[in-house]
Amino acid sequence: MADKVPASVGIIMDGNGRWAKRRLLPRSAGHEAGMKRILGLVEHARARGVKYLTLYALSTENLSRPREELEGLYSLFRKYFAQYAPRLSGSGAAVKVIGDISVLPRDVRQSIADVCSQAPVQAEFTLVFAINYGSRAEIVRAANLAAGRGSLTERDFAQLLYTADVPDPDLIIRTGGELRLSNFLLWQSAYAELYFSKVLFPDFDDRRLDEALKEYSRRNRRFGRV
Ligand code: FPP
Image (cartoon, rainbow, N blue to C red; front, side, top):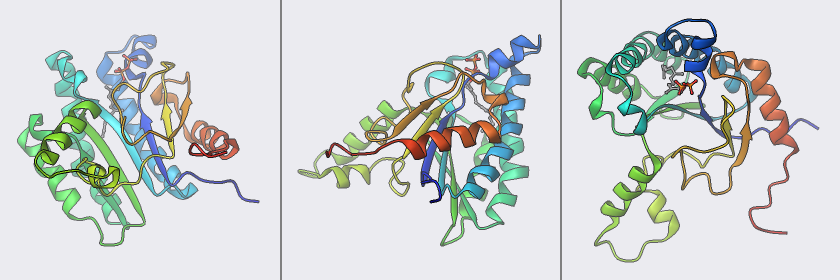
């Protein structure tokens, strides 16, 4: 029987800085290697049958990093959303961003808006970037939107999150060796399978993704039932 494939996958892309440090390179080189890795992984995940892939590109906490590092990341976003993402949306995929992107330079926001607006009506694959995203902030924002609306169900509340039209992750992968979620999709990951890899993100290649998918296919998901 074919392996069970997670429809919705999230990746916490950690370890770019250490990858660069090991090579005596600036941290920016690690982020650039990370961006190149994204290009292949997206295609591979799609080919394997993943329908939604959410990548944690910048947390709200990351905003306190040195200006120079942030500028480097914004340049990568600029390049990705202007050059690579349009090809993706031209191939039947949708691109979406969650988080508060008002902090990004205006031209990057414009490229993001352009790409997101090109989403096909019936996308067969959706790539979601979490940028200046923090799950607690997302939940508080939703709670504020909910205030005064009376009693809401979980389903109603979920509709107020950035991820309203994205299925909860079946699988969350974190690269880079840390064993935590770091404010990523906390509400949405209630029943996600967690997979932690020591591999630094720029080295997390297609084969590593296959290992994570294989492990997922062996998990027995009971959602609280027996
Ligand atoms: C965490 O590694 C990674 C980030 C804060 C940035 C992730 C960004 C990319 C992979 C490239 C961005 C490009 C696009 C198009 C989204 P870290 O720097 O915290 O690594 P460390 O723990 O080794 O220091």
